[in-house]
Image (cartoon, rainbow, N blue to C red; front, side, top):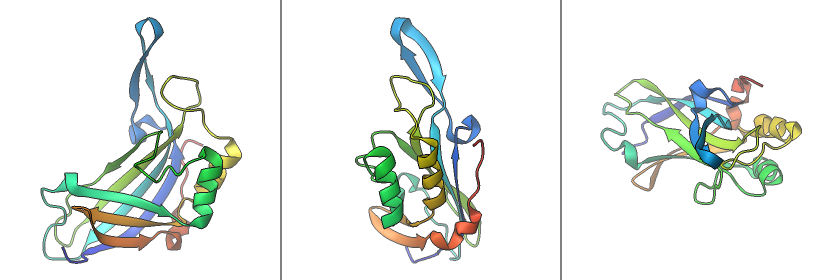
Length: 172
């Protein structure tokens, strides 16, 4: 696929809004079921297809979005968690992506969600880092590059830090 994507906008927020990050059903001792809404780092990307053919048509399961943090963001993440949450092979907390087909000359939103932890103790998620650590993560979250791959082949790369004015916060 030719390089047919333009990054129109990049937003990031730390949120525990169930409508945005969803919830996870867990069953603890004595079969007590509860739904947990983890606090998550949520990236939203607005991409435009500038080509005359659809992007990702029928191959959505082969599309992967990856955040490559710069040195500062990686230091902040490692300090808060002791690991790189952006390394999806080693991420112990969980992550998710939402990708869509983009028709020719159209715009679509994509998202990446990285679980940061939970306010209440539970058997699934670690406790949230301190408020100061979350603020540092939010402030530095766009010091990174978005990589779009299809069939393990990189098809686009976007520096996010030029969009720092798009940092938004919900629920915090």
